[in-house]
Image 1 (spheres, helix red, strand yellow):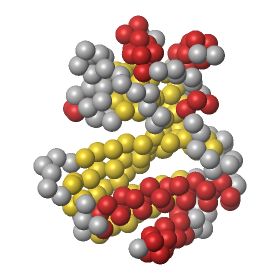
Image 2: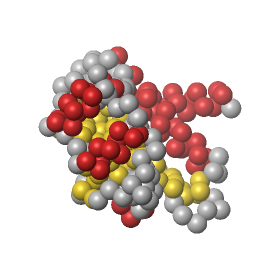
Image 3: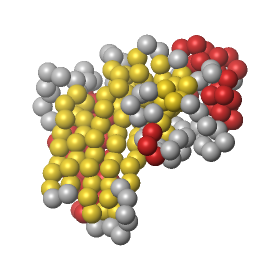
Length: 214
């Protein structure tokens, strides 16, 4: 089993580090019956960083495919969105849509990852904004320092009585203009209809939190 996993990862990594194309990100895919995996192929000027990023992505793809292959999920679909990119970093949202065997509803999970294109490393949230605890996020939403947004990006009213902030998510996305979205799964901060929600930090809010938690 371990050798089979290693072989699968080797195949994916090989595919994800194929010949360099003109665009910095292209789409790879794996398709079978009820399996539709779309994932980014990231190209950088640094071949070592490129390989490291795509190895990380390959692991995510393999885990999604594994759950389908072992019968845990009847269908699996993955999608992604590049939310920001410059010469130094790339921010990607990964989405997994899975239909578990014996369950009536689809499961949806979201991952927000920012990579350093020069090293291939994931960049932790702490590099951008310092957040001490979940209560600070809730206070920021109530005071208007922070705003809550639904999956389409529209601002929505925060209802802390029914949907309290219980954790500081480490999944985040860069949106450009110095804006950061802290990513939460459906049902965490709003009803399911809102989809994946995000707590938005504009540059002023980032400065405020960093001064408060310095």
